[in-house]
Length: 113
Length: 113
Image 1 (cartoon, each protein chain N blue to C red):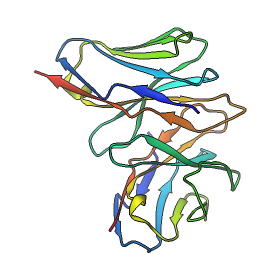
Image 2: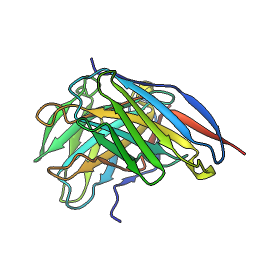
Image 3: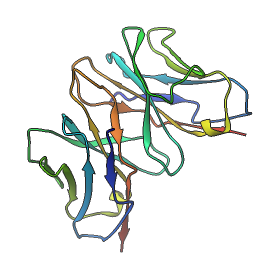
Image 4: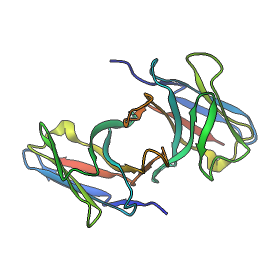
């Protein structure tokens, strides 16, 4: 079945770039998402990429998609202490099939001073 | 900015009791969802709801679970007879008719003792 995998922890120095990686199994995924969860808060949609794109940039965020390898990454430039959170990679299937979003376990980003 | 709200933020209940978790989706949204996240595990899809009926449900969503849109604003998840393993964070989400973004609420932490 569909699965999304990502590493559980990442530590980055403040000011450096953070790169969070994710792999997924469903080759028919249409949208791939990055959600952010701060302590005690809900899931905030950070950014998404449609499956026919390779890259999407949105201010400090860059999403790269390698559809052949089913690999998705999120790069956060100039990482700040406010970026400390859990980042979930997620995907959904074709619009005419499943509507559910499949999440990874989340990567906890820790910012070092 | 409109947001999905959920009440209560934390619910403690005894095993075997019924609980109702409440959500108010964003007002012009037509698709509604429940997901759950057991501590330390992935966010899992439970059910999607459109046009006053369930459009998709997961294996987790058995006969103990039900959803309802009792009026024009609320969307509820009922667990008839709670089990210890129902302890989790429950997230409600909603989206517009032709949208790809599911907007999540802050979650209700359910603790079954």
